[in-house]
Image (cartoon, rainbow, N blue to C red):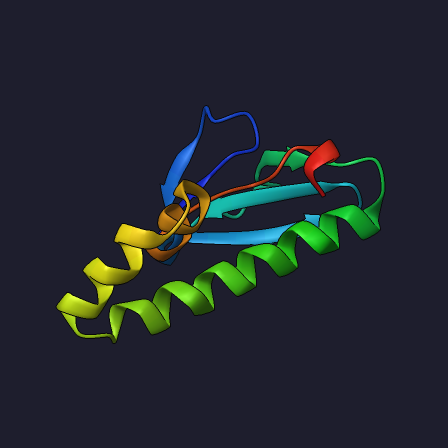
Length: 101
């Protein structure tokens, strides 16, 4: 699964990244990095940051379940799904903009 920053400028593999909330900010650290991390999303309130993280968690679960499906069923789902849903099933999550939460 790929994680894309809110502004679309950062794209990293989920399994090599630690994602964490610090107040209004969502930060990421690559595995082994011990610094403060790079801001990949910013929201007006900590509650919005938590909501965005919940969306990430749900997207991860959807992607993991999708990968377990038969290939033919995967193609059927992708063929009739909206683009946003296709990206989620396809393993791409981009942190939403403030106004989209």
